[in-house]
Length: 138
Length: 58
Image (spheres, rainbow over the protein chains, first blue to last red):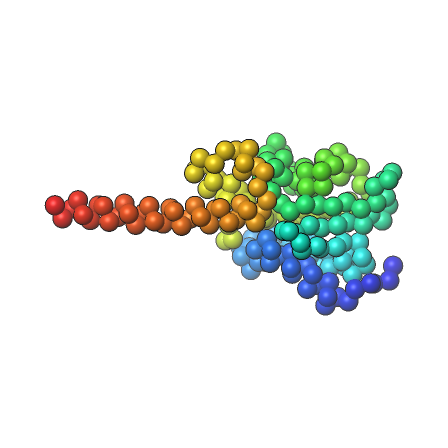
């Protein structure tokens, strides 16, 4: 798939998201966490370049994910700004259950629930997981 | 470390903001009102310190 956006512009778009949520990789003392965040952000930049991810700053911030493998009539997932409800949605998950937390949070933010997120396949699910890795730090 | 949503929510809970209101707040709202909590907290701390000094002088 051809890139629609330059790496520089995609990185700038991701930075808008990071700035909005006050995420600074330098703040992370845990090397593994910093590495995971760096890895996730690189994947997100590539997704933005390919047009699979859009960051929309208007009345807060929302993210649109254009699915590569649409399920039924849903081809775009829209994640609203992180809020208390999405945080509370993760509470039932165990401390080490990061995937469970990500699915619960992203399911809440999309309004579709965690089961719908878990049904995504391949690159679509991977993209949610990379996005969720960042959001877990918010 | 950058404050997180959990901390923002905890601050508002401490200020007796109803849980339903806290859950409904978006990130930027939580951050804003949590900042308000921090300011009030600092003012209360200073007032308590001043009261302590004043009572000590008596």
